[in-house]
Length: 194
Image (tube, rainbow, N blue to C red; front, side):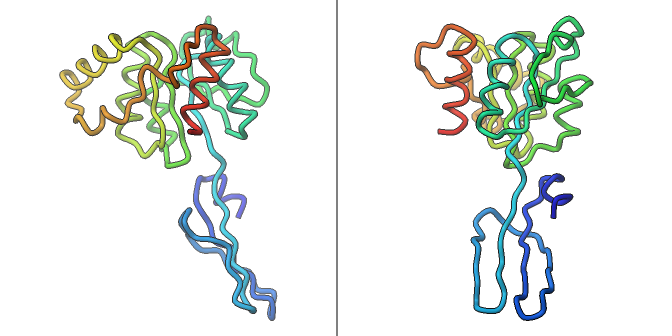
């Protein structure tokens, strides 16, 4: 059961009370615990996870808040000068280029991906993969004007559809007048759990 949930599978565990036999089967989030007097079925799912592209000050604030909300936090930043400053307990640094990391992560409906570097070479490639994935949330830092430019660039150079581009939350976070990294992190996490 632990191996399956660690692999981001949703699993139904059925216990037969008469025999003590336990079986595991694939399940969906919509399945509920059930008991028919003989078999007790419980559903277990993977932990929510978040991939942050960028290891700067904002990423550190988002990671800290995400961990308080029980997200598994992964951070990818190929820029050594940023990645070496990553100081978040229980966050995992993932080496590699962001687009490769997103592909290897195989994002599912329990995965949020947020691009926070302000570097189009890093953010756009990660977003290209993230927007085609099953991630439940994909966001990117930047103003409304920057987001419009980004979407035009992704559509023109990478043949992304309007449906794929419409999944992008940008500017990332709820509009609460956030200015500091901590305030922006609150806005991002509020939008994710909204």
